Image (cartoon, rainbow, N blue to C red; front, side):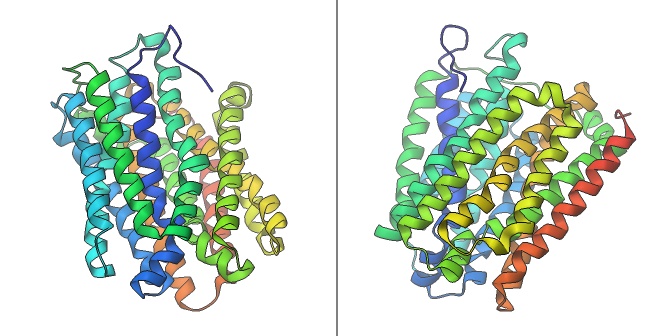
Length: 387
């Protein structure tokens, strides 16, 4: 893991921690879905609306707030977004019904749509140009660490103390993150706004839009099943809270390893091959998914997916930047929105499949979407550079 040391400013640490808090909060619902379903006395598919609706909010809010908050001081904006995240999660913990929880959860996810992309945009004004790639990679490790540490802890707390305790944990961490950002980040950081011309040029580029399509399809395929890991494993394996936390931990560790390996070897592989390699790992796991009939075989089956999960998305970001460096701000923002749209679609489709009563279909539906993503990715490679 890269460390700022003497070369990167201390302000990057609270941005990394903020992404860790945001990632943990986003994943707290999938990690506690069993407890939410039981406590609120609703079906798993109904509780899954918390995932799909929240993802749609993030998809819409990410580009919207990139435009609305263009002139804001980023120290103030990032601090307020974490405070909002914390307050809304605390409010969520006080609700007793799905009807009351759903709008609060959706509103809380305005914060991830603001914090993560705007933290990345702020990095350009905190470090020299030659350090920008390393600095952005550093703060995005917060999401990977959230999958390794945050989600398993939230799942364990939810399984032992109840889902409200997990939400309160996110609220407390958000307050800590907000105070750290406010104290450490310099004032008057105002990245330039995205121009309308950049947006239009991005939307009219076949190569860039095909790459964005890869993101939608791969995210949708993964979230058909990923959204419902907790109820799936409880239904198929009878997992305890401790075993469920272990499975999330194993997935997160492999995901972090995959991201580190991708950062190291993407230069040798090339971005097109790197994306295909990550998607191929996910497809292998989905093909082998029915073999996960015990705790340990499930871990083994998950490893290729986890290795390709975060790494394929990182490679996608690099691919977009490489295709059109001058449009990177617009294309990466659009890709972030596409990621959330795919997650929302996948969660909604997975909830519909579960409502039919057949958990076994989830992996096959997911595989179809991931295979489609691989096909679109191959087509994008043939398109060549963006115009």
